[in-house]
Amino acid sequence: MFQGLVSGLAAGGTFAALGLLLTAMYRLTATVNLAVAATGVAGVYVMAALAGTGWPYWAAALAGVAAGALVSALCGFVMTRWFAESGPQTRTAVSIAQLIGIIALAYIAFGDEPRVLPNPAAGRVATLAGVVVTQGAVVLLALAVVIGAGTSLVLTRTPLGLRLRAMAERPVTTELLGIGTRALTVTVWALAGALSSLVLLVVAPVRSSDILSLSMLIVPACAAALLGGLRLLAGALAGGLALGLLEGVLAGSAVVQQYRDVVPFAAILLILVWSRRREVWDASR
Image 1 (cartoon, rainbow, N blue to C red):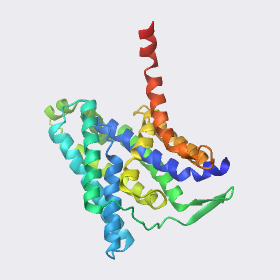
Image 2 (image 1 turned 120 degrees about the vertical axis):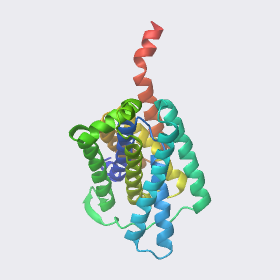
Image 3 (image 1 turned 90 degrees about the horizontal axis):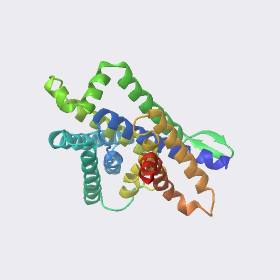
Image 4 (image 1 turned 135 degrees about the vertical axis):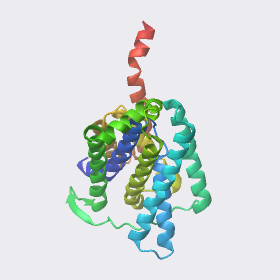
């Protein structure tokens, strides 16, 4: 079991980082951005295409991060231009449409063959219970902590955080007060796309690297974010790590290994049922 926990560190870091991005975007833009992983996929495939033409890895990776930021910024521009006054449910529905659109365009641009990606973070950091802890796992865990801590500091300790929270909660009022909201919102989206690209550049070489599988990392990310109620950064971090460790444990069992992909869906269902328990109980009375 301990071996499974160690092997799940990379997955836990991935789920936590993406779950924190979802939580941060919801708190900063009042949008559950379900396309955040797909924007990172765009960055990964741009990197792969450039590396395949002879670009040095780090130059291609920087271009990929920039591409992910650009794709996400375009999604943010659409959201702020036409859906700024819409409710969270409408904006979430728009993000689903953006997710589908990015996946479709990625298949058109890059084809449906998974890519063999370079893995500069494959080096060993330590060996625990016979399982190698790679540099990638450490980087992913560090990224999750940095995203969570950075978002918390911005929200609670800076004037920019105050403006962003006001923008998310009262966009029309802040606009009437002369506070520019559109540029700030698009910047948040661009930063989320860049960070998503960075996370996926690290994890894609050790997971299934096809477009759909990487984009669907949004499912465990959603489960992690929901464990934090889309508000608590620490909850999203803990939820993502727990899901990753659970995936590692299940992967070590031949009996339940084939069902491990069901875990995030089951977690989302249980969280939603638990969150509505009071309403259901009151209705039954």
